[in-house]
Structure formats: C-alpha cells, structure tokens
Image (tube, rainbow, N blue to C red; front, side, top):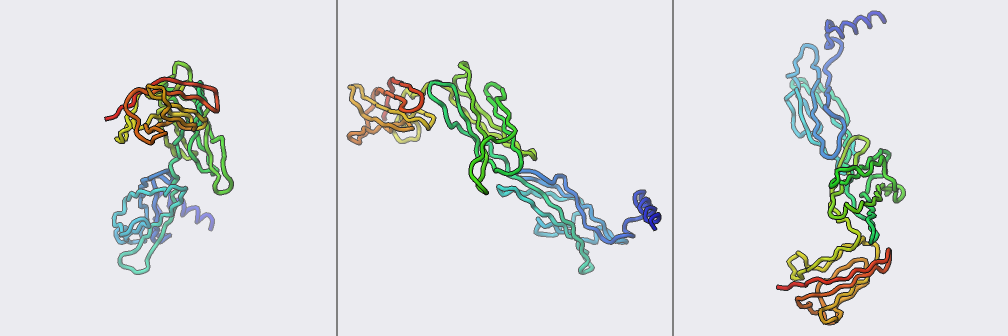
Length: 308
C-alpha cells in the first residue's frame, strides 16, 4: 500500500496522474507580499482548481475585501491600511459554483500591516554659550520589535550615529513608550543653519524619516527689527531659547525708559508698553537679556520697531 501511494505521488509530480481525480474543487491563492507598513497594495493570484471535468469558468470567486463577485480568475489587487496599529488582516477567497447550489470551497490567509515608524524629533536642550545640542525622537511603541535610529547631519552629508534601539523607556504597562536621544556637539565651523535628519527603521524594514532645519549658534539670536501690525509676520520681538532655562528680558526706549520686562523661559515682546497698555511707537529700542538659570550669559543691543 505504501508503495502504491509513493507511485501515485510520483505520477502526480510528473504530471501523468491528474490531481483532479484525487480531489474536488480547491480554492487557493498566492500573494506578492504578506507584510508591509502604512498603506500596502497587495496583488492576489487566483490558483484555484476546478472539480474534475469542469472548467474554472464554471465558478464565481468572492474576495472578503471586495463587495462584488470577481469573475476574473487571474489576479486582483487591493490596498490595505494599518489603521495606525499593528494589524493582522484575514483574507478569504470563496469559490462558488455558478449552477450547483452549495458547491463551495474556501481558502484563507493573513496579511500583517504595521504603521510607519515615528521619525519626528525636536531639540530638547541647548545650553547657552555652547554648541552642545540634545535631540529627542518622538514616541515609539514599547513592543518586542527593534527600531533602528539613524541620525544624520544632511548639510555635512554625514551620519552622526546609528543606534539599533531606543535608549529610553517611559511609562508602565500598556502606556510604555520608547524614545531615542542624541547628544551632539557641533564644531565651531558648523555654526549657522543646518538640516538634521532622523530615519527610523523597524525590524520588518518599514522606514520613515523626518528633516528639520536647526540654527546652530553659541549665543542667542536676537532679531534686528519687528513689525507688530497683526499681519502674521514678524509680529513679535522673539528670541528662540532652549525652552528650559529662565531669562530676564528688559526693553528700553531711546530715552532710557523701561517699556517692558519679563522673567520667563521664553523671550518675547508684543510691542505693548507694560505700564500703559498702549502700543509702543515706532523707533529704536534697546534690550538687555540675562540668563537667570543655566550657564551664565548676558546679551544686549538694539532693534527697530516699525509701524505702518
């Protein structure tokens, strides 16, 4: 009996013994991919086999992702989305005879779609009077797969660091998330605007990148003018800070009278005189900025307020 079975299998492999004698209709399909990320287009190839003595044209085919019958038996494509989470999608092909009620066969398979990695990042610290910058990535799920973080200085066409996994885990339980942090000291000849890029790739090969332009400078960059006219452009006297240290800001008019002062982590003036609540007139003003916390630093100078 064993010899007979082996003989029949050999005939099937050689194409001499037809499969249809041993089995009825068989629903089946293959896919050009079974895993992807974000929005994934999958092409399905219908490899179903009709019953003995019948043609494939005797059957209708229904895909679980389609609302109507597919009479084409070769292939069909469909776009799946991850819904911003790791998703397993079941796909079913139903093979149904057109003339014989109840003559049906099914085949099921699954597709895995992951969301694109989060490549967003920001500057979280920059001590004044230094070229040290600390960048931190956005949240990544604290799951079991590995994320690779590649930090590049695009302006210098140079990779700063490749980190095979996030180095900080925050939260507990289901709220656990991961981040990656880059601490980098720029060279003195790299002062100015530079483009930084973070590329995040997960274990499955899904990848995303984010670019941002950063002003590299030892000192605070103070604007030379501003125009508080409500047009959405240069409406504030604003000095970018690291958002962590506290600064004292004092502004004086050309007569030496103080028109505004603040102690805050942000350095900004909207052009309103603090004592009267009235708009400050156009003219030249003088500023004094001092770091209250962090590395000691003092900056002073002047700027012009324009009004129309």
